Length: 173
Length: 277
Image 1 (tube, one colour):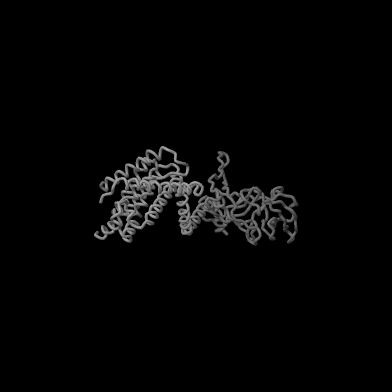
Image 2 (image 1 turned 120 degrees about the horizontal axis):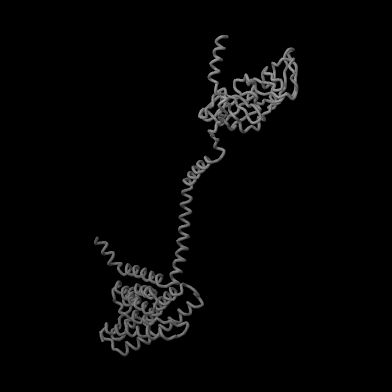
């Protein structure tokens, strides 16, 4: 399977899960995962910076339209889009590439990098989304618990989805 | 130009980020009622603080101009104060009569300057040349005579008060119908004047009314001067009477200036008399 086919498939998958499933079922008061980050964070790290910003913005914007939250997700995704190329490039230049290992680009660097990268980006994204949504209201009673719980769910979803996609569909170089 | 393109190329991602971020946040504010209110409230607060600060700075900086404009305004408004005006009435009283030809007309005036405690006292009235006031015109008040116009400007005139060492009035004792002697201000009391040069055999008594004489050059006849209070005999053949003036000079406000319509004609005779002598 080609790169673009995989990511197209991931996009469809994310869309279906986020818009058709998660929007229509009540996972819980504290849980508002944003699983479309799977698509964005697993995008190739060597995208040009400007393209990264553009893609992140448009994906965020499209989900904004469907999640009825004009501007909030676009704004959060833009932050990730700006930061991702720097951090990804940094990781790739330091860590030795393990070509033999099939999987996402995240598996090519250190193991710890993947966890830190995913968690930090998810936390930043979710924090910004919830902050914009609530405008700081009930910060410690609602915002922070929701933020942490949702981020954890999203992280789990990303790990599971990676297993699903990168193990089920053989990644071809 | 090249450097600009290079700059854009280098920072394209940052430029795009800023543009899209502004766009996104605009959407957030635009499409969410709560965010809109929050944003405008917060921004109003911030703008309010900033504007208040700059306003304060500007106000301080403009204090000099504000002061100047306030001073100008004060001057302008002060001009409307009642105290700044004198009433320039043109309602001179004329009497039309076919049998009696009018001799005098009266010009009402207000006292705007007055003194009673000096050796030579003067009054200032708010009528001048523009109202037809001339030197030598008599002035009397509601209670009696006041003085004679001494000097005239465009809008004002200076009146030599009866309370002046140089003032001489031709008196008449009304009860005796006696026009004799002269009235001068003797001591420095604003209440008394002295009638002198009256024949000692005239029956002048205390309580008799002293009015202006028909021979007076400045006044019509029978304007009150005062009341004889005490008769003193001096100089053998003449007596002197102390007259309590009817006019309360210190409370004088409204007066009338006497315009003698035949003054010119009479002056012609006076000059002939003077030439003959």
